[in-house]
Image (cartoon, rainbow, N blue to C red; front, side):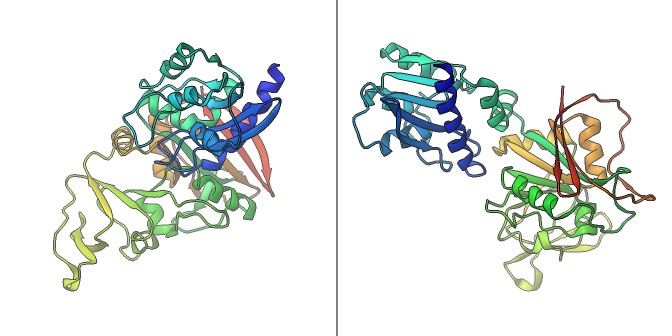
Length: 368
């Protein structure tokens, strides 16, 4: 019987992944309803603010659900202070006799309450099916809910000798397959983060191309707004949310450029005027990594992909404010180039996986 349960929970995982990049800060959830040994309905949480997976599965059913079994990778919700109705009462009303769950919901508003409500209504509930895989699927949500801070992944594309570029110049490191992988990665994260030097040197887009998916919020760390105002990220901030973290000392003027309502002007620490679109979000305050992550959590950012450059990588690694490190290693040697990061600490990491991406090697590490 356990093998059958695992089969249907794995189908829940497959469905849940269809919501990746669209449901945050909610978890990824899929559900299937089985009756007489056959799947008669299914659903998943499609986007934030829409019906949950269980509700969609019940809605999609074309036959009576009495004596049916519901499989779901996360405990059904039971609280009412949200945009959609709770799922536990819907399950009870449907006539479903048994519920098989992978993980309990760590949200204090839910944790155990959904299961208790179902059991009090006479519904059999089994938990812990394929539990480890379920926790991996919702690693962003679990970290955000339990620690009130985003899940942070550092992605570094480097050469064999640990270089990310020739000194002060843009250099393409990895191949086409690695680049496609990075675009698919961006689509899964709430935000991508870089430093001002990366904006200056690379003028990156930080959007999603080559694969389908939403664009993440772009975050720039710049203590003095010291990057070109005509950079791609700034010019396209109307189309893709862009947040800049800078210090309290940075003076931002309220004047408009050429009396236009499209641009504001500001001054960096070198007293050079810069211009930026009015819809660009500039956050003044502490620019240390813990403070920024705490602020992002308050903005309901559950996951961050850190993409550069060397100084930013070093800050995250040295402060140990990260969960995962992805190395994309190209078969190249740059010699006198820019090192990927500098740290004065010895940190032990666990290798999670290794794969080929064309001629590049992908290594995924986690902190212990």
